Amino acid sequence: MIRARIAAAARGDFLLIAIGLAASVPLIVAGAAVVMALLDRFPILIWAGAALLGWIAGDTIATDPALAGRLAMNFSMTFVQEVELAAAGAGLAFALAAGGLWRRLREIKTRDNAARAAAGGA
Image (cartoon, rainbow, N blue to C red; front, side, top):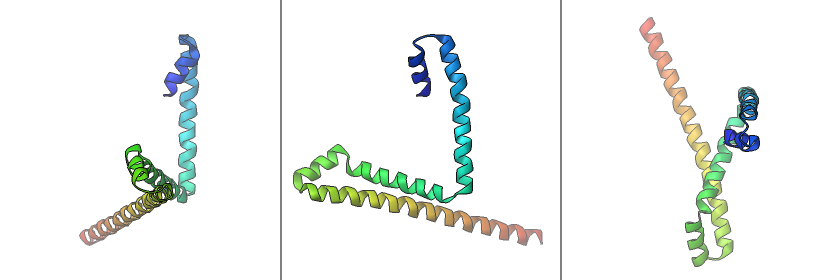
């Protein structure tokens, strides 16, 4: 996507394309490093990101044109808005619950592997 924008801005000039790519790649790498440093320092951002993705997923499902149109045809707009809010909240809750369950299962597996290693090494 970035390459397409750089090529469009360069208007076919290969030197400008090369300069644009040479400048954009280090910026992307540096940006990724900053994001990773923030995630290491503030792990709550991972949960916030998961909650945001869950909210967006639920809202996207509820606002799908086929579903929203059918709901609007059969129910009032107030009900449709409530369904959208409920679906977004359900997506948020599902994302956080799935993340918490996955984390808990990983902790159990790590603890069991450590116990096996200690028992086998003794």
